[in-house]
Each structure stands twice: as structure tokens, then as C-alpha cells.
Length: 610
Image (cartoon, rainbow, N blue to C red; front, side, top):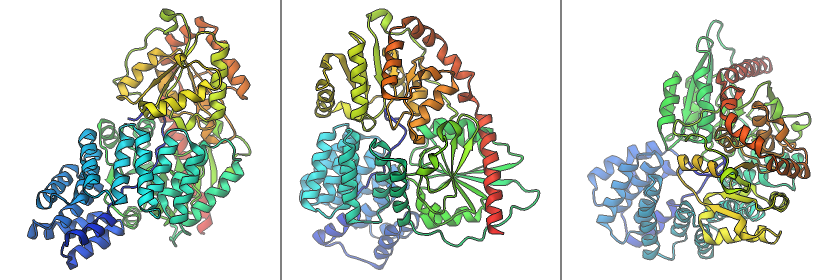
């Protein structure tokens, strides 16, 4: 798991035009089967393309382009060992085939072999430095290494070679966001959309950028998201049907994150707690990763369908064949979302929950489910969908079994207070840095730990250090940490006395983990639901006193807590037990509240169809 936040952004791997370019370069023969496979690939029908290509490759084992194309398709389907084997065969046949090297690098990256992936991708660029797409893939690998300055350089190089390459602009925007340059990320995404107005990845990433921005009102965000939603088109006709009397309501969850990911940690208890006498639960899993948490979820639900291989049309057809009554999107505009499937109206009632606490802008999504604590009066101004309010905590945290024991607050041994935040840098805008600098100024000798993937890059670390230094914070008071294993991340909460939440985009899983490790969190909610997750979590464990109303009060609360080491020690000793006995552990209550919303939404859908 990466450090610093629940929301991820879709990246663009570029391969199709490499094949086209290098086919000319290497004079690979075309055939009707390859043409058919290419057409299926461009439609997103990867599994069907594999079915077409596999027999061709068996009868043409020295066709490097077909071997590498098959490898690329197998990567998309998660068959990574087979994909790597195909790319290596292509390279054996044609050692100078840069596309095969580039796509081998992407497959190795997907398998977590980052050192090998970087070496392979660098070799690909050396073989054909004039190909912009290869620089994009290399830039993505630099990001995986946490070397964002190198990644930005690679994307800019790709743009210099091919200014019309939208994927280079999209990935450059992600790199900017990763280092906290939100305004640059927004502008860069808009450039990508100017080149490809309907690009779903750029559309989703721009909506993510808007959630980090502190200079936009809810109405302005709603206008932007509605414009994005319009690109997905109007919903297709769907014969809304009444659930047959005496049958269970069929519920479908669509997600790419049902593994050790923030959504997985928050949904495991809920999925296991559904009333199977009244509800029949389907999970449509679009993920590349299957891990221990995936197995736990899979064992608790009736129907599990891996759908990574399916196009949006094929997924829509599958869902409709199951007769799903209420379909729930758990991704919103985060990575690998299936919003185009929802836009096609795959079920008579469609709702969004958890993964993106904001409007999707998709006309065919009927409602967004939020907690009452996250959706005060007036929040509707930021949504195109109806809002369904839950009377309970909207999170059910399932902590990892490998979480280390809680240790004593570090101020006991080192004699000073240590603040910290493990949120990503995009959440640390100028207002946040200013308030944190004020806190450090008012708490003598205190320190601040920041942990994010980007901070492993010395260039980026110096950039962030300078933002504090201009506000009077000595560099020696800042402790920057890069990515680590999840278990190591949790252990590093032992170095922190007080966690500082970000705003207006606050932490979700990050806050849960701090509380689980005995670290109190200070938060500042805004009107946006995304900014109110922290306050919902703190209210659930009885820490309303750490919820601020203004930046000035936020600083005052943090300073007051820092001066009360007795309270810090008391919270350290009792927070884990508080979490265990709170609504945060009550998956059954959340499942019941969701089921009531599903029934209500289904009834409303019915009436509208009558």
C-alpha cells in the first residue's frame, strides 16, 4: 500500500501507437487476425483480442509484433507471468524491438519488479529515443520509484517530441499532483482535455484535482463535474423492472479496490454483514491485485466476478444478465473506475458510495450515499445526484492483523512534541502549510514528520522544505520520509504524538490508522463532504473536541493538546480500545443502514418507472 491517502489517479500506458510505428520500422507482416485483434484492443475487449491472437502466435512463433501485442493484452488481464514470457519471446525474435522492451517494463512494473522494470524501460528509450510513448512509460516507472523530478522530465521530453500526445500531459498532471502542485496539475489536465476532450482518464483526474483546490465553491465544482459527466453521454434506455415478490433484492458492488486498499479495508466488514435472507450480493472486481483481504471478502459474499477482462459494454451486459436491482459504484473518479459502464445504465437503480465522497456528474447515477455528519444542509449545491444520508458512521474500519503494538508517546523520551501527517502532498496546500508553520512556531522545539511517496526524491523534499522555510520553520524541525511497507508505515506512528489532518481534502484511512496506533488527530472540516471525513471519524470515537471550525481554531486545538502531555498519554493508552468499541468497528450497523438506502432508492426508481 502506498502512503498518504485513499484516492489514486488513473495513469495512461501508451502502447498502441508504438506498435504502429515499430511495425513500419521492422516490417512486421499484417494479417486479418492481427487487424481483428487490434480492433478489439482499441474497443477495450482485451479478453476477446487474446482469444484471436493466441492461435495466431502458436502458428507464427516468430512474429514479434504479435507476441508483444499479446503480452500487452495479458498484462491488462492480470496474467503477468504469461505477459512477461510473451514479451521476452518477442525480444528473442527481435532484440531491437523497442516496443517489446517498453511493454515488458510495464508488465514487470505491474508485478512489482521495479528495479528490473526501470532497467528495461531505460533500454527501450535507448533503442528508440525519438518515440514519445516510450518516455511516458519510463516516466511512470520513475514515479513508482518516487523519483518525481525524473518523471516530470520524462513526460516533458515526451511532450517535446509529440505535443499532441494526451497521455504525456495526463501523466505529467499526475506527477504535479503528487508533489503538491495542484494548480499546475489542473492546468495540465485541461491541456490533455483540449487534445482529447472526451478522454475519461483526464476527465476523472481533473475532478480529483478540483477536490484539492481551496479556491472553488461547491457550486463551481458542481458545474465542472456536470460538464465532465456530459462527456459520458446520456444513459441508454433501460426497462426498469419491479423486483419479483418474495425474491431477494440483488445488490451489485463495482470496484477496482477490493484488496488491501483503503476501500478494501473499509468494505470488508460491511460486505460480510449483509443480510443474506433479504439481499443477494454480487461483487464485480476490476482489480489487478488479489491478496489476503481479497480472499477474505470473496469468502463472505455469494457472487464474485473478476471483470478486469471486460469492456464497459461487456460489463454492462454481465450486470444486466444477473438482474441486478441496485448497483453501487465504489470508485467515483478514482483510478480504474467504471463510470462509463454506469453511464450506460447497467442497472435500474445506481448509487455511489465510499470511494469518492463527491459528485460523479454521471446522469445515470441516481444518488450518492453520505453520512449525515458529512452532508450538512446545503451540501446539495455541489452534487448533480440525489443525496442519501446515513444516520451512522459511513466507515467500518478493518485494521490489519500485522499492525504493531502501540508504543509510548515519543515526547516522554525525547522531551519535545512531534506532530505528523502521512497524507499525500497534494493535500498540503498553502493554507495547510501556513497553519502547520504557526503551530510549530507556538510549540517550542516541536518537530513535524511528513511521509509521502514523493518525499523519497531529494529534489521534491527540498521543494517542500523551502515552503516551510519561507514561513520561518527551521529545516532541522522537519522529518521527511518516503514510502515503506504498510506494516512499517503503521510502526512509524510510534514516532508521532499528534497527527495533523489536511484540508479541504482530509484523510480517511490515514486518520483511521493514526487512531488505531493511538495517535490523536486534529481536523478541520469544510462544507464539502470530502473535507468532513475526518470529523466523522473523530465523532465516532468521541473526539469531537479535536474538530475545529476555522484554521485559527485548528491551530489552537493542536497547540493546546501539545501542552497537555498527560492527555496525549491517556489517549495513547485508550484510543485503540475506543476504536474497537465504536461505530468504526460496527460493520453490521453500516450494512443495515446501507440496505435501508438500497430499498428506498429501489422503491423511488420503481415509482419513476411506473
